[in-house]
Length: 366
Image 1: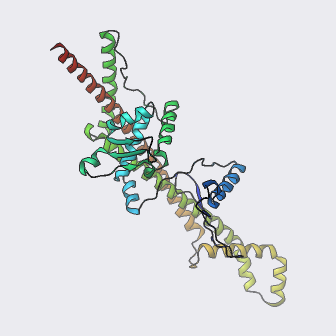
Image 2: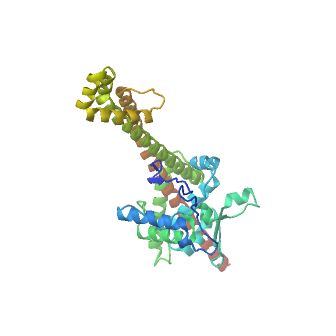
Image 3: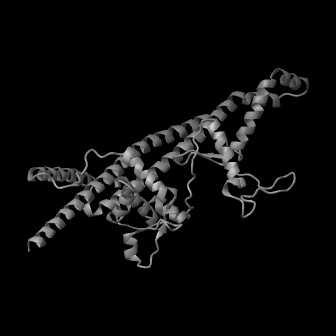
């Protein structure tokens, strides 16, 4: 078993031999085609682990994510924010945050450059594609929501919309006021326009602060988000490295405390050796355990000194502090750019809607 903390969630990898050493029978994921999912051996094993976790008050995933794996190249592109799949997922996330319900989500996808196909009667009911991807390749195919991951399936999108409606993770200081009905008089309309222009102006000031042009806001927001997630991954890796060295440091400190017992025993022989073993049995036992652990940690025999290991840990901690500061700034930039993007696009949508209303009025007068 290997416990990993290189991600935002701590997780355990368990590897076991699927062949029983006693009778030679093998562990099978399912026994026959008629076996239901709940009866499968693997599902039973998962149920047991869930029971153990609940017994010890640990978090249990109610429905494990059904997303597929990805190649190293696709992972690297995703890490850099260059993958089409990463862009598509980011765009869908933005639509979810501003949707009132699932029907509203489907209607707003086009505003965020996302093409969507929804057929509730079909087994594969939901598919997505970036509009820019379709423009580049007219023969491009839609991506199943399940391929993007469990969070992008129909029911989970509905749940996420409900969560955002109930409690936003990040709430902008001010929002564009949407006009859902005709204002009572011109003064109300003017007040709304002034408020919307003020909010849009604030958003433009934010992107100007980061040197981003309005037409580049979406790509900049995606890039900033990907950069912040990349830093978070590096932070987790750095923390893992520090924790690993701290474990080694504790072992080496213990080894230095009991090492002289082993060295003194080697210098003795005969009765003196026997007497020394009897009088220092506990210390020699501890020495044997720690020495075995040291050899496991450093099989090559090149064992660093406690002082050098302490210096390495201090250097990594200084690096961690600096990287934490960098991540905080990157995370702030990603949030502000995403908020500015939503604000500006909402403002432009309302301006476009207002222009269309004016054109209709002119046509009616003509």
